[in-house]
Length: 264
Image (cartoon, rainbow, N blue to C red):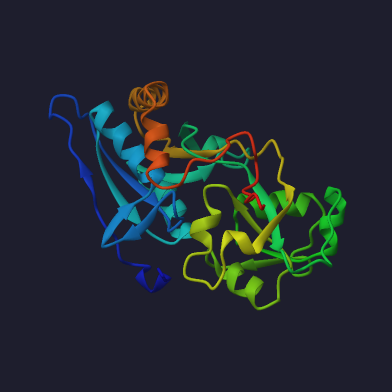
């Protein structure tokens, strides 16, 4: 399993367009967030990694990807005139800090409990406040859950790195975790836990959750941003995006917000 002992390690992938069409090089920063973006066999891979590289290729822009912990990836994108970060939420707080291309691949998230925890009963959103869960510091969910009434340090425990909450969840220190139909199977990899051990208890619906985006530094040419967005639109229209997703996860019903296995 990936650990942030690799905090200062980066992998570079270069998609090279023609010298004539490549107006600039973009430095794309991301974090370990499987299956969207992660390190595997000394390469940065993942659904949105493939998507953004396809956008760069189709747009004739040279792009290199560097993998860092989330806080540093965001900082680099904000301070590098040729920088961008993915996969990130397009929130009101970040709206003016970047130019935006998206949405990339994403799916709705839900709260999950261990099936054996029959004591956890959620009928409405307010019931969630009776239980504990964890989130990565400065993640969009932290702000949403605080607004929902979760108190940091009480119902909501904050961690430095993704998936630290899974360890606490398994150890009985957390009642709930957050996951989606795309991310949950990968969240559980490396732990003695499978999707069949979990039960979805409540979907997360909030207008701030608009999907995963590529956020580009405001110094980047607006024409390059428009080309990237047009490339993404075509990627979606010609089903390339769907094909990328299917290489990483098994087909599921897109209309079902939570990943729930049918039982006989």
